Length: 252
Image (cartoon, rainbow, N blue to C red):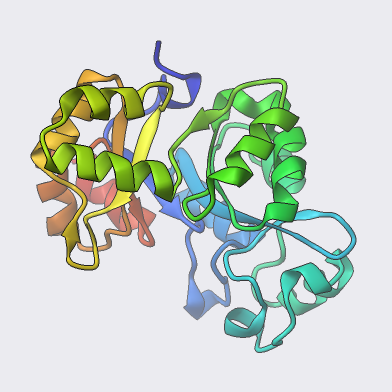
């Protein structure tokens, strides 16, 4: 049965990667204002990332440190929420996971757990919102295990890297029974077109995923022509930095 996260929303999916950053308006990725901008553009789905602050707040932030976004070399895990709020002032504002879920009750969130310490907190916080949340941790499946154990409800899921490596190998070798076992219990595959020299996205992968009832979402695609080509290939969702452009391109 299709998870509620994927029901009742336009297809193909447009997933606003880290919200909709608008540098010319001083709106940084993953900020509260970036989520609001994605919502205003009409995006039903927002992709974001989760870290835990020093005082125990789950916040939406991609990197381990503040350096790329604010110039501060400290790790997210070493700053308090108040300090992070000060850092993000004038950059769109910091968004805690609680604020995001409560302030945008119709938005569906795609959450990548970036730190072991955040997994349990994310599990608790998304429990009552599981119908509109997909969780993944592409780099570490232990985080997904901890998250699921902490959440009494089942959010939608996309696999971590270990499962994806095994799945790509099975698809490449034509081992359909193995691939179908790996796809069991998943709701979406969120993947790049390639991983180094290895082509991840193939027609066979799309076909077998669909036969298993699993959607295929590809990241991160910003070129309108490539968006159209991927949808024509059978891809179900486009993860993009330009949700505004993608919505115009794919809803015409």
